Amino acid sequence: MIERRDPLQEKPLKRLQMYLYLIPWLGVLPALWTIYHKEGDREQQATSRLAVTLAFVWLMGNGALLTGASQAPEVLQFRLLFGDALLSSGYAIACLFLMLRVWRQRSLHLPGFSPLSRRVFPKSSEKPIR
Image 1 (cartoon, rainbow, N blue to C red):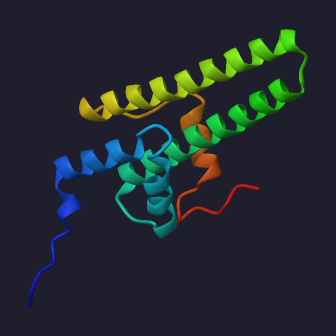
Image 2: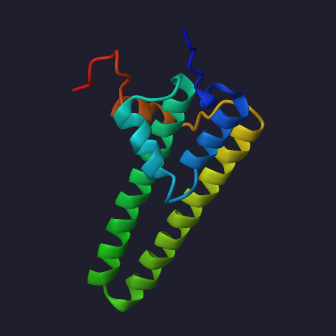
């Protein structure tokens, strides 16, 4: 009988896949794929949930700030657009920080976001939170 080996079971390839999930703005697609198909181990699932939660918070904040800027007077438009730039920069820096944590093989816990990601995307064995 031929034993099939999953090439992603090797540690360097797992870390590479986790880097992929944490690429700002683009990594959310493979992370959603991993969550939807329930692939990967516990650490990869947690990283995927965190990456999607960060992207979703950025998207909602970005949409709110840009919508507000389009409806606001000129004086307030600059402040809202500046806030949007800070939010986008913060999202990218948070993703790079998490990539550094993956490289150092440390915990990927972000206060506020990690508990939120567990509530938004409960594990497959858990019941959804209502």
